[in-house]
Image 1 (cartoon, rainbow, N blue to C red):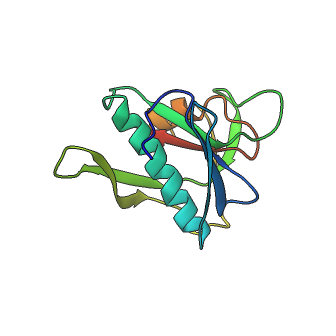
Image 2 (tube, rainbow, N blue to C red):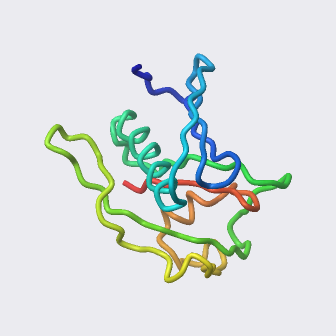
Amino acid sequence: TTIAPSNEFRYNVMQGPSYGNLTADDSSVWSVSFRSDVEANQFAAGIGLAFWGCQGKPNTVVHYDTAPGSGAQGVAFGDHVAVRLTGWLVKDNDKGLPLLGDVCDGPKGLDKLFKFQLGQGVVCQGVETGMVGMKKDSRRGIVLP
């Protein structure tokens, strides 16, 4: 089955981080399970990277939510946040399609949160921009050009 990229395509983490649903714009749903949270996170990052690549690798920050979180209002510049971050380098395959490369920035331990004030330049600007609007307990992938 081939899925055409569109803004209606979604990947949602369901029933814990090792299980997810893919929903296409025609409302078709595929379920995916993983052996570990690490595999689930890499898959989610790959989905976001493919979405970015299908958009022509725009020179803008692209983000995608894999878990919507809770609460009425998302974070804004000036808010204090506590997050787990993992960054991958992007490389192109021999056909020019983007692939996840090596981890370039990651957690020192998955149980430890990185705490900072959004908008103070503690992390790169693209990460801060991509985090705006996130809600409590959400998961978001951010692709930086």
